Length: 380
Image 1: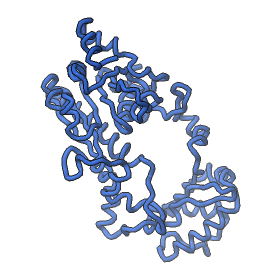
Image 2: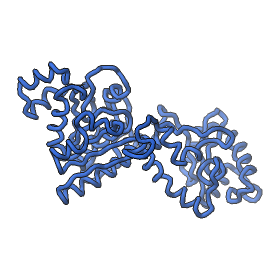
Image 3: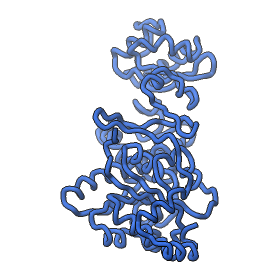
Image 4: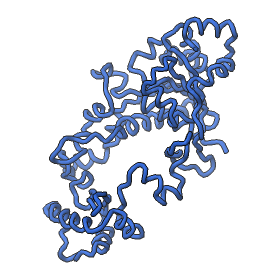
């Protein structure tokens, strides 16, 4: 059964991190995605990701976009696509001859998706950065980590994938709906700083009303509250404890065999340290998995903190089929779930450049043109 994006054609230009992630997502949802890969064989991060299970579901053509004739291949591909996604620094796509003006001139209905850290304009637009630096200027990084130490990098989940890939996915799909209704495409500028900032909307509401202190481990959801943090167990492993509501807190107190009358309240900030000390002592009394068995049937909002490997075996993840196998590696399966047009992850990854000949043949390139492209170094 075809996925919800069946019939949508996407062209993915070479990039690292969030752009390949978005290409995987669109392919999982049923889009026909052609990915342009580099010819260099440098084994850089872009090549590694393209050849990994994150490169699944796409046809791959190998191009050197700096060589004569390569831009024409991209433009011909764009003529038959609904969307294009790229993650170059501002101005690079234009210099390569595949920027929005050139592409939209060939296909006015196309949605041109651009993903960068800083955005296409602004004082920092032309400078280098990574998830950590993008997150730093949003105010979010300042609030992540222990109070006594430095801010903690949240891997690259927040800016790269949350603020970048997922916001470009949303913008891309919205623009595709508009293009189908109007016949007019457009450029979608997804900056990770913009998307990450948007993720903090609720926190800023709390801050504006005086309900959020702008320092780490001082608030309800940043590890400050004793009923929303992780506790170490007897075996050195951890449980996540989050019974914010009174009924869930009461269930936790009963499961820990504490006296409700003498247990400090998590609802009074003055009692937070005392409450955390009581919970810390209680959780050190058993191993993580012993506590997991106690709390699994209860509405107490407690769960074991699992490693990446352990999460593959958790019964809930197994029952839902959360993970799938791609070329022998365990990977998250498509999300979300669709009742009428279920998404599906491809089981294998095509070799880099494996579809070059087939795709160029479909575009109508003749033998003389292919010979010129080879001579120019644009294709292998």
